[in-house]
Length: 325
Image 1 (cartoon, rainbow, N blue to C red):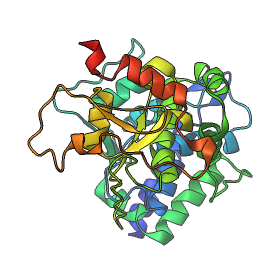
Image 2: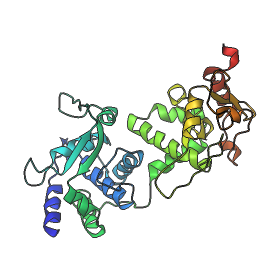
Image 3: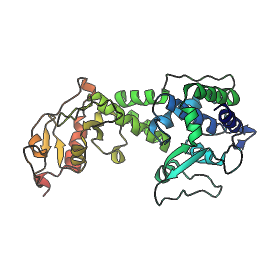
Image 4: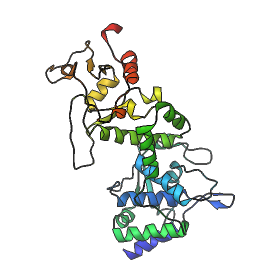
């Protein structure tokens, strides 16, 4: 095990990095540190490193804490892709690999770089390490050795804040407390990686505010597994509003989420359920129509409740009411 550890430490000391104005890019060691911390926290449980809001946010937090002066931007997609160019003993011994979606090809720029974050998401299902390396990183002692080595070798004298997630916490506060106008000013300046993070925070915050309960059916399932049984639903779709604030979100189980998005269900200004009439379901007793007129479950904090103007927009623009036919 010690021999393998030394092999990987040697490889990590020679990461290929772009140079600009005499400064080497910090992306790869920061990504490795972020992945290692995610393994330590149990966010990564097996050798499939998915592109998650948590991992991207941790990468950006680490960048903010470790990079003092740089001519580079904290672009997550670059190291996630280009780490495939690093190896241990020779070019055949790469320690980082990408699993693409079936039939998908990674399109590159003329400089052989990944085109964009969205292109990375569309093409790459997950990244993975050599089995030996992942085994080392799954062990507490060797994981600490690798983490300290990366920190000291590339960011000597700098410090990581283990129990902080500045970006996640900042976005959470904005979702809970910003007005839609204030939030729009922020989102207009956000790049696609930050929009991805914000979407992930929205999906976590809204169910938590509703106590992981579907606000229409009352379904609440809390599992010891990392499984969420209710969805965060935008009242006005994000594509129309760019609004992730809590007043534009409700918590719904998947079938009612789809019904709401497709206009079979809406909510009136008194928070009562409206159900479209022009569809047939097999069991009315346990079906969607049974919720007609029911008052939805609301958060105790009044400022977290759905904005009436957002519900109005949904009824006018999405709901398939009888008046539209």
